[in-house]
Image (cartoon, rainbow, N blue to C red):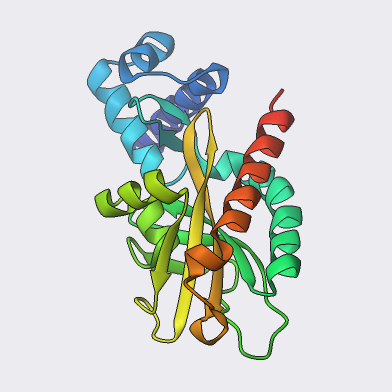
Length: 218
């Protein structure tokens, strides 16, 4: 006979699976999740928020829930690596792809510079938000969003690590910002600023990744 704890675990898994099935069809508000799953509004909303914390769901700018980074990661990887390698080869600097997970950002992919002096953070690295240009972007920091609206990119100059700079641009789909492309480099190789030197190329790489993801979803 199953223990009470087992019954509780099974019930939670069933509810989690029901929510995943519901958002697989389309983005859903908490009230729509409640209707599709038969859960109460408070339960559906509470579980959805918890699932978003662990990357199983993500919230759009409108507050709806969609499948999270754990499910779109393979599409990001497939689209991201060629674009990052091309960006690295064109600039000579380290190109990375970062995603948000709760109050941290995680390096999903990295195409490392071939220079002996280079900026490196291997895939799987975690940094607290809003550190760095991609951290400011993924945290939607107010000043960073104003910078993004003005230039299309966000830069950091020796803030997180003295002597290093970076410039980041958002990977934006119809779900909103799902990742950030970051180019990181020693400031010794920067002529004007990370953004002015490399911003246009980083924006283009982010656009290419977004287009490839949208094509894969068609």
